[in-house]
Image 1 (tube, rainbow, N blue to C red):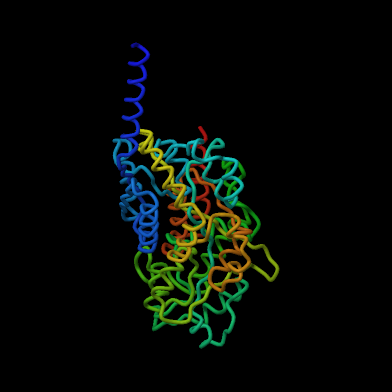
Image 2 (cartoon, rainbow, N blue to C red):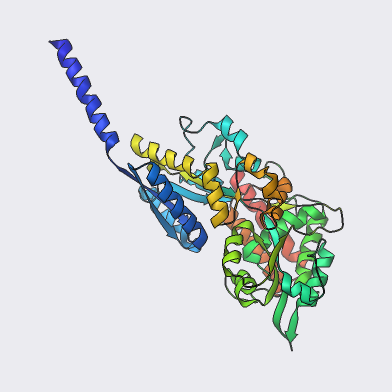
Length: 421
């Protein structure tokens, strides 16, 4: 009789568990507002739900400037998403705040991830554990209006920075003291802070930080030379001006829609916007170098998808969240993301595709990945802001570049020191 009751209870328990797992589960996904990214994720969610009819994914998005504040207000209160997208540079801060959890080994094998993803994806690890995976990665390139260059007598994009300045000068137009068209769209808050810190400093001879991210290295003659070179584009060569088209995306809007900016430096994520909006012959080139055969440098970065503590509240939610994260990082999802957003695949086998590397639009970005660096940050937002402040101090306030650069380096070092305590 006792054995019979035990069997009956065991059967009942299995039925309860089976019923629980048969219940539909909804998970919540967050990312910031960006039209092509939202579109791509909507399509991925539709495909995922078709393959997993017992799981529903609800996507919620927020303006970029309010995104981190929304996260800080929601997750500590046990609200918000199960799966969340974050910039890889935010990881140290988010990990310390408890916004994201290590990817569980029962669903994600670290050794396998090391092998199949591009090396820069390992910037998403802390203490050997992955905290998220990218659907795509990015690098920088020069977008240019080929019609404008051709009208000015240039058939090819600039290969060196001297050629870049020459062409930008030829394409800049002024009426009295005011610019009516600029050769280069300055974007300190766009990608220019990466251009200076991650690209120009390396081309002039120094990495921005040491390997263990405890020391600022750009506070050197080489680093200062890089900064002086960049600010001279505005103060000496006058090929553009900050906020020529106002707004965070002003430089991009001026290039795509207003057609009063001839060249911009932007990430591969902008390809979709340019393709959808530009009504002229636009093209892409790898970033120039100081001299022919000189050092190539680029900034590699990515947004990764991580799991929040909410995903771990019960086994069913965790299983669904892990399954969704795995789905959006599969090759088919990366192909869709490339087509819709323009961001590059994050799997090494796809990056090695020779056909993709020779594509006239994607090719310059893909080839740049071979020499791109995904620099680690301790506080990406604060480190970006102090670099932007240095640019503004020189270009808008007329401060000596050496003074502004020293201020930035000291403030940056203080951030590193604070984080390492």
